[in-house]
Image 1 (tube, rainbow over the protein chains, first blue to last red):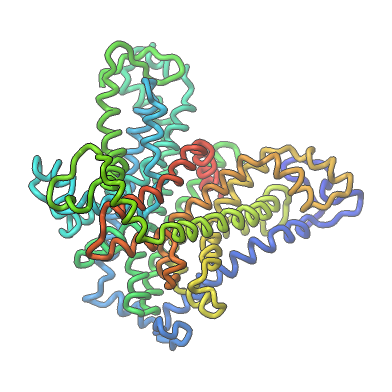
Image 2 (tube, rainbow over the protein chains, first blue to last red):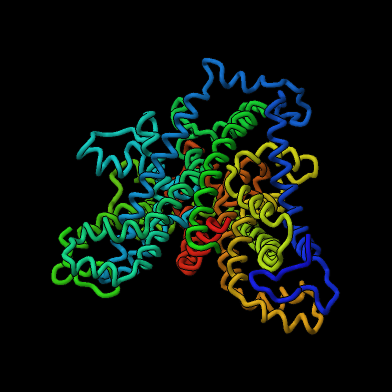
Length: 313
Length: 285
């Protein structure tokens, strides 16, 4: 810890006051003390506690009184007949499905809204709104629309598919929760993509058109490369957000029917609080946290590379 | 799409008949319909809901039964509880975030990278992971079934984002502005509060809205921790209402609508800032 160098510029010791140099970590530590202390109590220690709980047989009735059972909970999870395989498969399908659908919907919306037409800012408002709808409210309205006698069956079902039991058939239930989640996430994709689109230099796009490129190939070869880094970043962010999403599934299907929409977070909560098996739930949580960690590291590395390419911050 | 090009600032410009509407209309219908349907259902009479097909156009004859139905739900207290959690989370998250952001933006010290990574990491962990350990923690300090407890939980999820958004704001402010105050021997915390805060109000506002926003809609911890019905926020109340087999659908959708509108309004108001803030928050690891 050497004498301070001012952030981003080489002014002599700006925080040292006049002459007498207080090392910078002192005030920085004071400012960080409360926020980091808070996170230590509310996040870092609970995380460690969760890992510990996953090695115990704690029950909800006495969550601190579990005995150490080694890898017992994990052995149960990986034994045959465990739900883990289904839960992981659901998590994968849900995460991928939602991410792909949100990306596709969001990017198409962004391209459309980026076009000048009458009322386009009104349209942008409508397309952005679902992101702000609280999860429970979104789930409830779709619950009603997915009802066997609901509007969706009246419009789609009768015309195309015949009445569909959207939420009580395992396949359709997954499709339905993916659709609702994407409905909530696509607006975010749209807004971020839109700002990336607006930063495409107009001259470049125009030059490509003057050279005779079609709208489609202008998009493919000029616009897309420009927005791709943004899109890739949102894609990773989306997978992490979807992995965490709990409210929509819980209200729409509760993880059913027969566990067909139970993702790792749904299973965690259910094990711990419905079946009161805290240790087992913690094991689920640790696996979920592990998946998130892998994604986060990928995201972080990608992000750092982008920052370096952009010449640091 | 046979979009005729020839644009200036916009990417694609279309003249004459606008085929772009062929794309706009279906997208708007798919995205906007559920919100419209929320309104439509709220205005439908519960008595006829299952007996005849729900009209595609809203009717305005059922305000009476709507009022009666809403009267049977603790609408005021549930929204008050949600507002308490949202506002509390907003304030605390912004205050803590401000301090952390100042440290990360203005000082250079060993462990700064670690602090950033830790902040970044908490953002990535699924909330469900914390459910059990925070429950046991709250059991031992008596914060289960307590709205303050929910505020703390929500802050632990929003603090990293608040910090990154505010840090991005502080990074924009030249240090020289603080220097004058430093010369006058003003304490740093005072400088932060009186000199910097007024300059970064937009960042603070978007951090506050975003934090309040996520607390306003939070369900997992609220439904797991709060058992006293008088303390239920709107999210839990709605979840309970719908689990009743004799649920009154128009009332539920009316409440959902009331619950969504403030969030939508806030969001549209600060939309641009929030998006740039969120990406800054997500991006500046």
